[in-house]
Length: 312
Length: 289
Image (cartoon, rainbow over all chains, first blue to last red):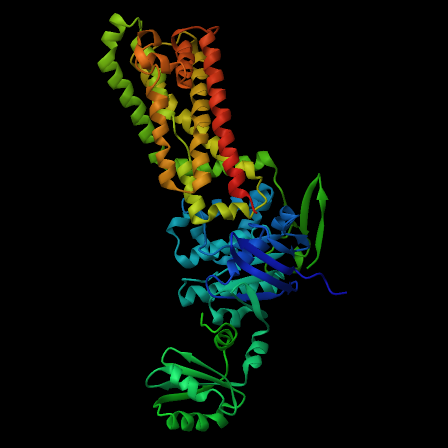
């Protein structure tokens, strides 16, 4: 028998007054999985995380995390989850060591256990001597890594990471990715990762869910999602307004979908190489000058555009 | 990964038992058991953090000390002669010591750091742990109590250095320190109520306005018998009048003084009201609905 999923949500809804931020989200995330949760600002991503981590209760629907209901058994959920919220909110006047010990103690660890975990976390997040410095002196990357360590200090079954690399330089981002992979591969921790970086989801997530306007509009492995929108993407840079090009290409044989993007147009098709010529001819006949044209494989960014009509 | 899930000594626990399977030791060799620590342990943990913050925050201690000492010296300089000559005060330095302590400690709190936690998101971070919610307030009050002592002791030492003696002896000094610390902690509830309700530093700062009627519409400068008109009428309604009288009983009176009892009751009354407000604001802040 397959083990219970780490996270199950059914018809999850949350309203704030008249505004319905989440409008019925269903999730089933297996133990040991990395699940990437994508969405633009205001899509309902953070509200979902706040419900799943017990900070707020759902208006309707239900969610079970690590085997416990987030609404009726919140304390049991809190014992089993670790959370690194957006912006790495840590007390800048405490040292890294003090913060790790403080959180270990709040999870009921004895002093020796807490000291042991502190050493474990020191090895995991590569902070070294900085643990004895005040957090206010840390770089952004170090703060995020300490944040991850704080979230892991009690050995949670499920780890929620809310935009863990936003604002980090590429080197720091890569380090956080390595640590996330390590936590998942070696410790078996289920990871629920929200991000605005499609590259991050592509790199880390086993499966991706895309939320838009409070609804889950697509879900699958990154490869499945890319295949779902078509085999190739043709990007055409044109002179003049892109909308005219969109109008010209819509309905062209072989075109699955077409979107305007800044001063270019993206055409999704099953046969990019075969359609390039027809695209150029169609635009030429419509009096539109093509400055550049290229064919590539779809990315999650294309999936996001297809599903939500917007880019992240 | 295998998990043992159950209850030990009445608390929900999660035991991770695959520790030795991980080669490089990032997971502990001993099983880690996450559990609720209990209210007292949580208060201790939150309180220790607040105390560390206090030690790294000299601006929390130094200004109140200066305020207390400043008013002590100014009031003695301006009112000692006239008070002792015509207001029936025997030793004005002793009379003014409780006023200096009230001025120095009323409104002291870690409410500003609580606002910082709320605004930075660290308060939410704490709510994600199994910490007992009352501990988030009680831990701060422990720090406030300590801060009250830290401000009170130097002012008392200074007063004794300039000739104030305690009719109730060393125990009286100790009782005065505790009385002031409890007053400081009790009054702090107002700042916490505002901090938790609004999450606004400006709103917390504005609670300082409450200090003025409490501290000045009372017997801070002269005994009640020397006051006239509306001020004489209003001081009877100000709990600080009774707190000051109780403290003065410890300095110049005797252990059996009824003023001491009224002073303790006044501190208790103000504390019940302000801490109830803070408790209600905390419940509102942590409400998940």
